[in-house]
Structure formats: structure tokens, C-alpha cells
Amino acid sequence: MYLTDDEKYILDGKRGEAERMALSILVELGRLHGAQRLIPVSQVHIDATLYMVDAGIEFAEFMAGGNAKTAVPTSLNPSGVDLTHWQAYRVPPDLLEKNRRLERAYMRMGAAPTWTCAPYQQGLVPRFGEHIAWGESNAIAFANSVLGARTNRIADLMDICAAVAGKTPEFGLHLSEHRRARVRIDCRDFSPDMTEDSALYPLLGYTFGKMAGDRVAALTGLPPDVSVDALKSFSAAAASSGAVGLFHLPGITPEARNLEMCFHGKPPEQVFDITADTLRNAAHGLWTLPTDAVDWIVTGCPHYSFAQCRHLARLMSDKKIHSSVVFWVFTSRMVYALLEQNGILAELNRAGIDVFTDGCPLQYPKTRWHFTAAVSDSAKFTHYCRSQTGLPAGLLSIGECVETAVSGRIQRKDRSWR
Ligand code: F3S
Image (cartoon, rainbow, N blue to C red; front, side, top):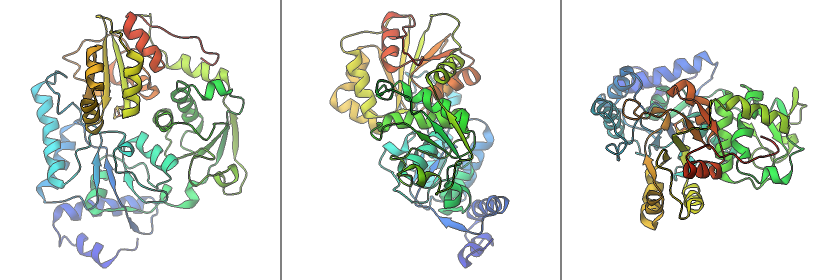
């Protein structure tokens, strides 16, 4: 791999062991993937932010202790807990301290305390063609496919190295030839009623991800005015059921204004259809609830935007959630501050809904809450709920989540495609 004089200087340890290690890991990663060089990135999103094992903390502390600083603006994915409202979230002291150690290390390195998995709704938004190094699967898919930025699916800890170096090896989705769609997936028979229904997009993304796997695929048949939040839930779902880092939506994806541009003028290697039946089967596969009893309603996976919180408040209106259920919304600190200032937070709280920041619902303090069954408007949450929390789960629309919360029993509206 070609190395600049400055990179050789760092690899010789002249700027300290932390910087040397960060760069040497990136160089090895690049060699593994046949990269010719390292390229600068304009920003990094670190996914290695929630406490899993001590090794994760030790690596971040080693970097921070070696005076490594983030070389470019660096945002942070959710912590393992709500660092701000930890009492209401019932965080055990030992778990809080583990996450605080990570917080201290990242703050010392100069990262921004965003603690959100929707960094693209937080101001650090890359533009079309910009090279970035992002962790967090939903954010990667969104950045590549909706914003047209370029990032690989950066692994945990590699993201810290990229932040310290301000560089990433040039391979994979940084190169135009690897961004060409190979597979076409059609949903051209969808009616306007379907595509205008926000409940479609998590399930569609989940179905799309299963078909695409790790291949770049183009999806045809969606209108060009799909909302940002619908694209967010699509991206999150597709990147959960498949190893999706980039998808093309002709007319939406900046580098794919039409079908020909998706495929760089070549024919697709495979073509699939998504029909109402395909969606129905996917919905069935995601549903693991044994009865219509539920006690945990979860939204904000990925973290809810201001628009989504506002919509939820409108849906609740003067309603109150049933005493047998807990309703949680996860969002960023930035959105929380807006909700606090304009009264929406108070409205949600009056309805019985708790709004948390920083955290991820899959990592909730399990020894302090005793849920038995969950529903969510997120296909990503529903997909991972069983394996990560042990609880059965079901996917509903946000309207159905509200009705379920009010009645205390599952409420599902008939849809032709579900
Ligand atoms: Fe975010 Fe956790 Fe969902 S990190 S995307 S809330 S699984």
C-alpha cells in the first residue's frame, strides 16, 4: 500500500503509540482488502459506544490515555444507557460506571456527545460524494443511499482508529465500481395507498434486505417523495435483515437518478419481485408474540426525529396509556431539548410516555425492568428483540402502537399487504 511521508512518520511511532496503533490497524485493514492507499475522511461516526465487554473500554481508554484526539468531527452512537436520565431508566451503578468510562474516554478524545444512531438528523450531515467513516448499520445505509456519501460498514474499534487518523483505507463502497447495483428488486405493483402508508417502509426494508443480502440492489416502484423518516426506517430494517451498506432508489439516491445509472449501464444479474404476499410472509416471520398481551411499547429505533415525536404527540392527543404498559421513546439529546422547549415533552409525559436519550432499547437495564412482551414500529428492533432481550415482539405501525398502549392489548388494523 502506498504510504505518505506523514503516514510513515506516524507508523514509526513519532507521534506516540496511540496514533501509531490506530494507523497501523487501518493499514492492515486496507491490505486485507487490497486497498492501494488511505484516503482522508471528513467525519467519523463511532459505533463502539455502548458497554459490551471490558476490552472495548480498555481500547478507548488506551487511545485517550495516549493523548489521541479525533482528527475530524466525530459523532457517537448510543451509549448502553441513558447517561442523562439514568435514575428514571433505573441504571445499576456498576453499569452506569462502565458507560461513564467510555464517555470520559470519548470526551477526552474530543468526540461530540451526540449519543445517537441517527447522526444524519443531528447536524453532522455529509454531502453527496463525501468520504466518511461511519459505524452503525442504519446510519451507513442511510449515508450511502439517501445522502450519497461514501462509507464502508466500519467495524467497532476500527471506527476509533479512523477518527484518530482522520483516514480510512480506500476499498469497497469508497470506489465507484463497487457502488454499482447488481440486483433489481421490483415493487412496481404497489398501490399509492401502500406507498403513502408509513407503516410500509420498515417491513419493505426488512424484505428488501433479506433479498439483497450483501449485494448492492436497486429497488424500483417507490415514489420520489418518500419521507426522510420512512427512508430511515427502511435503511435500518434493510441493514438488519441483510448486510446492506448501499441501496439504490432511482430518483432518490443521488448517484442513481434513473435505473440505468443504478446499474452503470449494465444489465442486472438477478431480478426479484416484492409483492403483497412477500410482505405478508415477512410480517408473519417477524411476529413472535404468542398472545395479544403486551407490556412494553418501544419507539425510536433508530432514534426518533423531532417530526416523529411531534407526530406521536398528535396521535396521543388527550389519550393516556394503560396502566399495564410502559411506552418508551428513544431520541437524541438535541431533539429532547427541542421537545422540552416547545412543550411536546410535557404532552408525551402527561400521556404516560417516557422519553429517553443516549441509550438503545435493546440494551435496557434488564435486571431492573421485567417486561414480558414488546411491540414496536421498528422492524430493526422487532428483528433483534428476541435474540438480544429474550422477549417476543411484534411490528406495528405507530398508530397501532398508540392504540395498543391505550387499550393494553394488541390492536392491529387490517392491511391488504400484511
Ligand atoms: Fe439505534 Fe439501538 Fe436501534 S443503536 S438503531 S436504537 S438497535
